Structures are given as C-alpha cells and as structure tokens.
Amino acid sequence: MIRVFPRANIQSLPHTDNTPAAKPVDLETLRAMTGEQRMLLALEMSLTARELAREGIRREHPDWSESRVARELLKQAFHPEPLPAWLEKRLEERRNNE
Image (cartoon, rainbow, N blue to C red; front, side, top):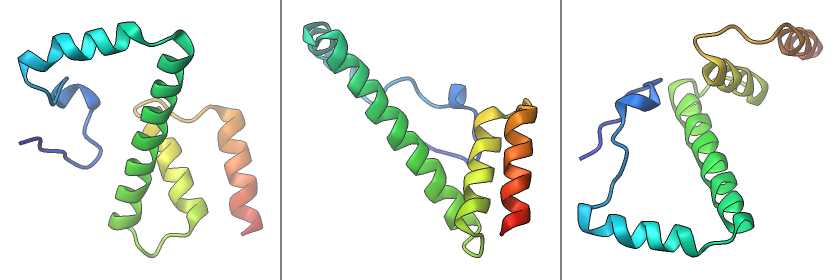
C-alpha cells in the first residue's frame, strides 16, 4: 500500500508500483518507444501529477478561488525555495485585480 501525505517530498514515495518481474517488461516497452513518445509520456505524467496536486489543494481548501489554488500549486512546486521575484510580482498583480 502506498501512503501519500500532504505536501510529501517525492523522495519519500516508492519508486515503483510494479513487481520486480514487471520491471523488464517496462524497460522493454520504454526502449521500444521513440523519443517523441517518451517525451509525450513524460508530459502526460507531469500534467497528471500537477492535477493531482491541484485536487489535493482544493480538497484541503474548498473555499479558495482558482487563482489562490494556482498560487499554492506554484509555491509547492518551488518549495522550499521562494518563488522567483518576477513570478511573485505577477501573482501579486493578479491578487490585486481580484
């Protein structure tokens, strides 16, 4: 069973959800893919991870606006580093326009 904790560091999660016997099949499948297919798979995985994180924030804070959820998602993505100054400035401008 995989246990996921809010805002957990990705390194605390298991690196695989497959059995050891499935690893060679996974590797064979990945090796058979073109570079473009691997890039598209990586993009899909990234978008899925982002949407899961966004839904987790919404579940924790159902009263937050979409822009507030987006800001928190960015903060989590850059954690523990602060947001870049240009991005913080843009978010502040949007916050003032809400």
